[in-house]
Image (cartoon, rainbow, N blue to C red; front, top):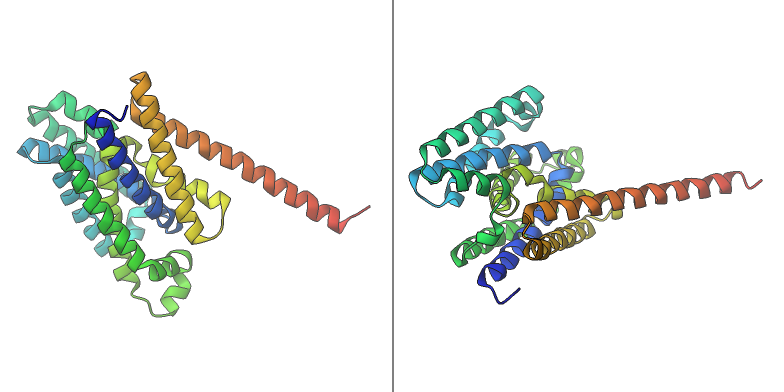
Length: 277
């Protein structure tokens, strides 16, 4: 399997993106922004389609559209975009724009599948280098701003009272999220970006209450899903995105059952301690 260059590229890019998404996903859930990640994926789809229409790298188009939308959302306020009607309109408009740009492009049929479901097995050396650079930037910023971001994400009232630059942190995080989403779209596609952005973090939240452990567990779970998806996709010729989603889904429901069982046992022990008879 590893004698093929495309599999080496896929494992490298997939691992890098998985670690990045697993790390940032913990803060996405803590800040209540899964819907923003979903919105960015659709906006990125339009940006990639626009780039294809112009004949340039789709990643550049995704980054342009998602970063611009991150700045717009940061300026207008996240609360405005929490409304279902606003989200529905934004998703519809950008999906429509994406389809328009693709209809004007000569790479229509293959581009639709690639953008919606990912092209992890078609990633080149140049793509790997771009992904590695952008992921390094995202992870370095997360590390440098870890204390402030953690404080603001898990205790926003306390962070505001402490005088932290809340608005700056919010806009900076949205920019990081936009970059991370643009990269994740290349691996799992615009429709399945939730797979890497939120599912591993949701699993980690059920297994530990430590933020640092959440990040480590989320990254590990994300990597496991990507590796399993690549191996299964290689030997079955089925879509890699499907296997990544399936593996992450199985892990999530397993963790859900385990945490439910653990909570039940804790409740039974408390009841026994209070009423030994």
